[in-house]
Every structure is written in C-alpha cells, then in structure tokens.
Image (cartoon, rainbow, N blue to C red; front, side):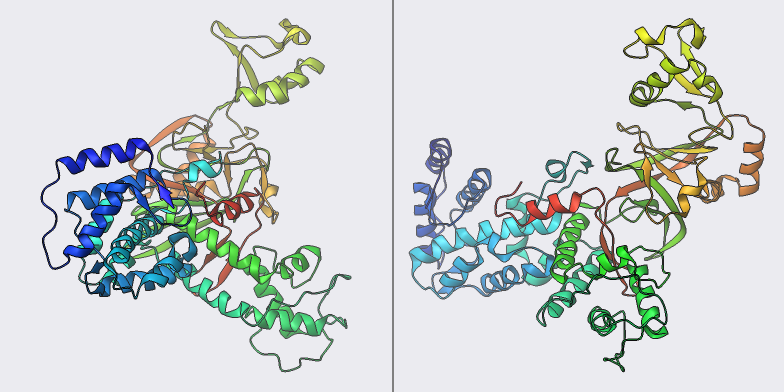
Length: 539
C-alpha cells in the first residue's frame, strides 16, 4: 500500500476544490475511480515510487478531470496492452521489466471492474513515465554513481511523456523515438539479444590453467578451447573437434578474439588471454547492459566533427559526419590516468592548441612529487628545465631551505623543449578538472597494450597528425606545424570552430561490421554501475 505524505494529500485536495467538473465521457465509472484514488492519496503498488513522480501523476489526472489514459469502462485500451508489451520487452534495452510493476499490470490487464481499472490506469501512467524517462536519459543519474563522472542528462517531464503517448497514434514508434538514436546503441542492443540467446545454451566452457599455448603445440585443453571460440563466433567451424593440436585455424580464431578484447594479436594464449577467455558469458551480458546505460547518458548528436576519447579502450578518434553517416578520419593511441589518478568522464569543446607549450606544474604534483626531491637536491628542477617563479620573478632553488617548507609557495613552470612533460603540442578544452590532450616525451608508452600512466590528462600518439586534421581548414598542414615546433617559439592557435570533445568510458561496444568488443574495467567503474543499475531502488 502506497500512502502519500500529508503535504501531498493536502495539496491534491486543494487542487480538487478548484477542479472543473469530472470528465463526463463514456468512461465515467473509471474516471470516478481514478478520482477516488487521487483524493484518498492511496494506491496499491508494490515497491517504492518517488513521491514527486506520484504527485506529478496525481496532478496530471486532476488537470484532465480524471479522464483515463490507458483504460475505459469496457476494459484496457489497445494502447494499454501495447504498453504492457513494451514493458515486458524492456530487457531488450538492458532494463529490468520488474522495475516498472510489469507483473502487477499483467495480472490486472483483463479486468473490467471500474475500481480496478482506475487504479490500473494510474499504475500504468506511473510505469510508463518511469520507463520512458529511463529509456530517454538513463535509469541512473551519472553524477551520483561515481565522482569521476560529470555528464548532465535530460528527459522531458513525466506529464509531457504521457501526453505524447496519449496523442501518438501508435505507441510502439513513439517509445522507439525515446531511445537513443545512435546506431552504436542499437548495435549493442542487438548484440545483447544475441548473447542472451547464447546463454540459453549454457555458459561458455572454462579452459584450465597451464603453460602458454603457441602455434603447433599439442595440449589436451585444445578441444575445450575450440568449443569456447566456436561459442563466441571467433571460430567459424569446428571440423576437428577432438584434435589436441593448436593449429593455424585455431590461432587465427584466437587472434580475432584478442583484437576484440584489446590485446596484442599474437595468437599466444598467455595468462591475460586465458583470463579473458574465461570471463563468464553472464558477465559479458552485464557489461553490455551497463554500456547501454552509458550510451543513454550520451547525446544523440555528438557534433558534425568531434573528438571521441574512450578511456577503457585507450584510443582517441576524430569523427566527421558526412551527410547522414559518420566516418572516423583519425585514430591514435592514448595514455590515460593511472588507477589512482583516474581521468574523469565529461564533455567539453576544444578551443585552441598550444605549440611548444610551457608546463605549469599542478600544485598536487609539485608538493607530492617535487618537494621531496627538492629537499634532497635543490638543483633537481633546474635539470628538468623547471623554473621556480614568484610574483617578483624567478627564485634560485638554492636560496630556499626546502626542509622547512611544508607546501611550495611558488609556481613551477617547465620551459618549452624536447623534455617538456606536455611534449610539443597541447589541445585545450577548458574544464574544471584541468584535463587536456597533449603530446609526451615518453613515446615508448604507446607501444604497451595497457596505457594507464598519466596523472589524469590524455597523452596522444602522433600529435602533429591530430593537430593537422583539426587545423586543416585554417591552412595548417603537418609540415607547417612541424616548422613551428622547430622554431621553439610558443604559439597559440585558436580554432575558428570549437570542436566537441567527449571523454568516455566504454567497456563494450559493437563496430559497424558487427564485431563485438570488450575491454578491461581498469577503473572499476563497471562494478559500481552494475550494482546500482540492478538495484530496485535508483541510486
């Protein structure tokens, strides 16, 4: 039994005093029933309903003189039955039907009792408003899930959504329009359905631990490996199911698997590849579910040209929208924040580039990393081309007794040059996190499969190529950019058109060719999101 607070009841009663005449249509009996429930402030619903949403729904009915939406005196309308079907199929979007009182609605769907129909109409409006909101903006508020997520989502209000449903000639296409329009969302949604069909045949077989498997080796685990790769589609046919030889066909299948999971495609089954192979199918389904939620948080329109950074994938892409389709015009490896310096998730717009930048050392790095080194060796920073700056000018590091300093009261600035921590170019999209994309002198890190080494900023491979693509319309070729770098002169180049930058964290997605990809949850963000998303109470 759901009972409204005294404030809500009194407010509803106040509204009723000024209400117009009760809806006087052919559905008077259901309308009377709805009015009774609204007036009493009581409705039989299992589970918690947000009081604000319940108040909105009650007010909605009062404003329409208690006219039913989904039912009539003769029973549930066709639109009401279509709603039940949509709620029962919510799992296709990675949403749990039980969150929308689907069972209760199904139990009452055949009723012709006016009192039951009145309550059912309210219940269906509550269910639809919750489902429509979750579908259009996500079930969860991103900023409440993790301190590192800073994305604002938007959805129309409950009343607007229900009005739209009532006015729609057909409910199914109306609901479809509420979901993300991104083809990436729909590819992942389709893949989720495929993986759920797989789980009907049981979990993937687990492969026993052992020495690394290399091409040509004879190993008793190979038949199980064949079954595992056949189940996930990496191995297309299994013509020799009992063979224990790790042959070239199987090596090719393992390489395909490794590519899909962001590993070096060497065909060797070492500890990391074995661990990925043994991730349960049920866990991969959960990954898809939570990444559909992440997609719902994103805007449908990411921009005509935009920079897309996937922290979990450790790659950056520049995407152009040509007519009605998108095309990736540049891909680069990136180095992102360490697990204890996690790069945040946010959207912003790139405004300018700096060629031959200074590096103004953040106070956190200055005090945690450089102060201990200054205490041991006052000349350390000078050898790194880092100057100690005060309001009156540069400070001689040997003039300060660093052992008496608890926090550096000066500004540390590294000069431009080959060893500068930002490299030769930085790409600025001003944000409160002081995170940006930049070059790096540590080029060797890009050769690693796992690239979580920064203090939070995004280091990018081949920065001059990225700069040339972003500045092409302004007459900057890669050659001109390199000439500017060679001059060692610092230069700011403003973008005539700001470019959206989307810093994301996706651990599952599907390419245009249907390839299903998974990545490690290095920041442990999947775990928190799974817990919150599967909870019956919104976090």
